[in-house]
Picture 1: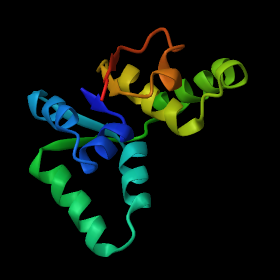
Picture 2: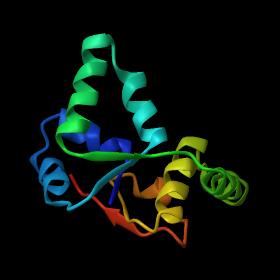
Picture 3: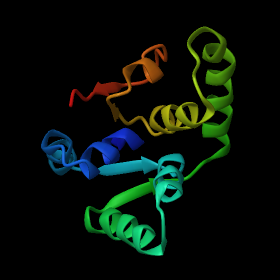
Picture 4: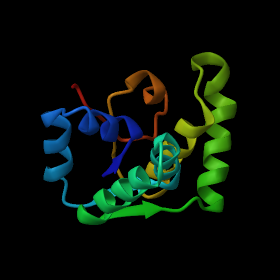
Length: 125
């Protein structure tokens, strides 16, 4: 399963359901986009270290941005941005999930619901 950035935020806020969802997952993945978003929100080097340590402790696999993911994400932006406001970061995360044939866990249903080939696992905090 790939975890959207919002799941990590729920965990940081102390949401036990989000933590359980992550713990119950046999394989934990995140898009390089999510990885960058997590680091970008850090306020200092200690928070960077905390994020990296957390990902290491839970055996997360960071999935790279490939040519196919970039191509698929650009198609998603073309198809869905005008109608639903899909942002490039979310397009990359969705494309990473689809290209790796993995479900995406997210509470941001409106960001992803229009993408038909995405296996969306809706998280309700």
